[in-house]
Amino acid sequence: VKASDGKHYDIRDPKVELVLPSMGRYGTEALAAIFRSLGVNTIALPVADKEVLSLGKKNSSCKECVPYIVTTGSFLQYVWEKKADPDKITLFFMATSDGPCRLGQYCRAIAQNIENLKIPNAAVFTLTDKNGYGGMGAASLLKGWQSIIVSDVFSDIRSMLAVAARDKEQALSTL
Image (cartoon, rainbow, N blue to C red; front, side, top):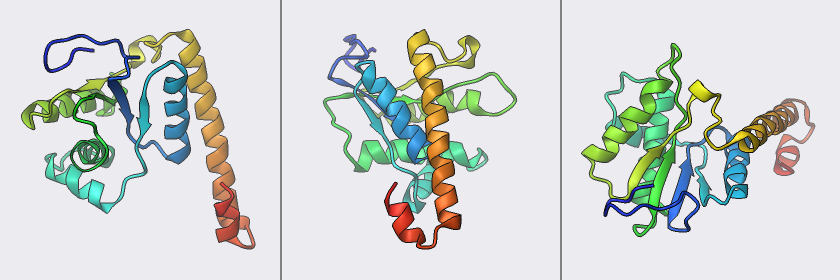
């Protein structure tokens, strides 16, 4: 990782933080846990709200899809209003793909926002489908797939409780 001052740091350096956009409560927390198990200081952002959406709209053309706008708003809120430590190097995680969706453009657009807004010590950290998202090694890829399955099961349990529980509020509070 190259900082604004030109110095290089290992991704596992305590000065480096990896920030994950919300991919749903369980999926984001699971992915953060995987990166932490690899020694990477990782922050999982919460599910976006109206404030995040508004901030994303202000920093995009609004011709992009909603996930891009929300992701942009989440990252900028973290940097400007929340807990971003100015002495840390903040990496925004954004997967990329060459497929038909605009996902392949997200990382470029967010990097352009970082440059245009002159956000110091911030960059985009991306993994790509070209190598099956295996840029962190086979063990992390396997953990990633396991986390997707586990988080999906938890989401299914939450959905079932929200629909079928007699006391929905109490049932959902157990998760």
